[in-house]
Image (cartoon, rainbow, N blue to C red; front, side, top):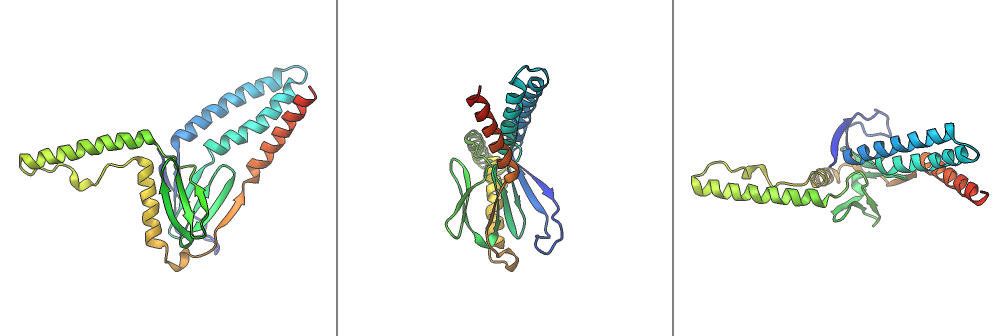
Length: 218
């Protein structure tokens, strides 16, 4: 499940001035925090109490694993406002003005397509097949209840509330609505920019190299 939050954007000339809707995965964050806590507990204990090469190996493993786990669990987020969407994936940050977004696709993963034909996965909005099945069962019950109420004399059966949707599908509907409403706006034009997250990539690479050296010379 992905939950929207609110975040104020800085009123700088190059930044949008409207508020961001922030979409993240609570389940991913919770799982990542647990894994990070376990890794830090074991790793720090090995660094402090280990003998010989163990502290060095533990330190290299922490340098490799901690940013890697954080990148895939805690880091991902999608920020969307009236001018653009910013996708923070594990190793990249992609800024897409609405004028450059062609469409969204939801299958086994949620993805955004640009007018230039590029595709970017939305890591913080994972597809939940289980959630879709639950929503489909609830929708079936809603429709059945509405039909029964109609036969019984016109009582409100909840049909005006619209179809039941999985949480991440609701998020994608919100993004599609924003795209439809803002794609042609003057403030929504610009170029797609992609930035590598060197704050994640560098420690992961350094940690991997250090582990490889320790194993090779062990």
